[in-house]
Length: 118
Image 1 (cartoon, rainbow, N blue to C red):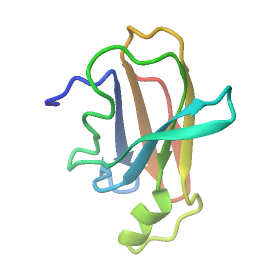
Image 2 (cartoon, one colour):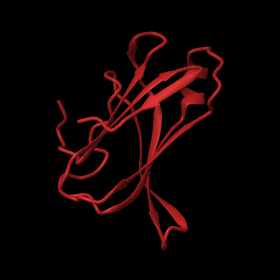
Image 3 (spheres, one colour):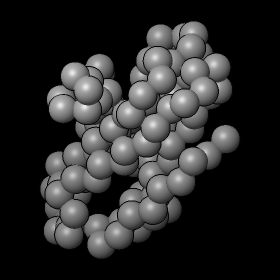
């Protein structure tokens, strides 16, 4: 259970092993300067459950365009596994600042899937 109630959460599952993707590096960024520049808000790693608690402080999110960047190449290399995608970037737009957002990533060395979770 998260100690900090972040309005944005993610969960990464390694579908090749059927286990959470522990230790995967990710970065959260927001598009600034009228859509010209990404500003990194947080760098973190997934925990033993494949989650990254506290991505953002509790409370409303600022409306805008965000990006979660997952270092999939680093994750697979640590496991001695070749992979096709060196990184995965999930870009999404927040319009309702009071909602909570969950962005899961299902990952294998050769594919990935994401969706807006609940």
